[in-house]
Image (cartoon, rainbow, N blue to C red; front, side):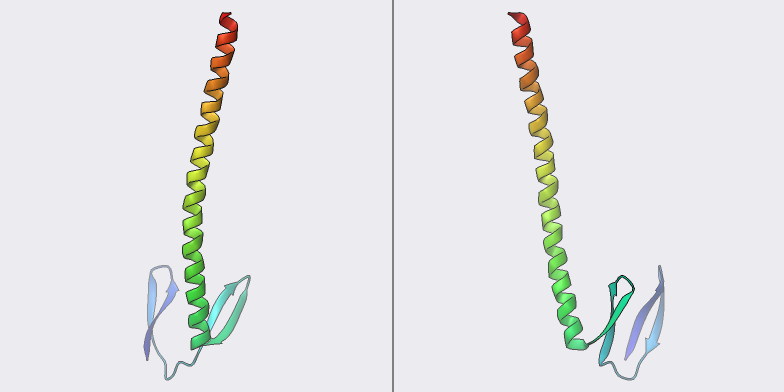
Length: 89
């Protein structure tokens, strides 16, 4: 089997291997774990689905932050209008 391996940013190397029955996944915090191909596929698919959900929630959170800012500005306008009305009496 011939694979392409990332050595550094924008630097790849062709690698040949006899058989591929296990993979090592970098889990973070200096932890690397060996998995079978089926286990690794399940873990990567779950991570992909989770990342997709996180992206969706980040967009919804950004929308809510915009709505909060708009509401705060409108509340300030109403408050200032009330102050001007009281000053005019």
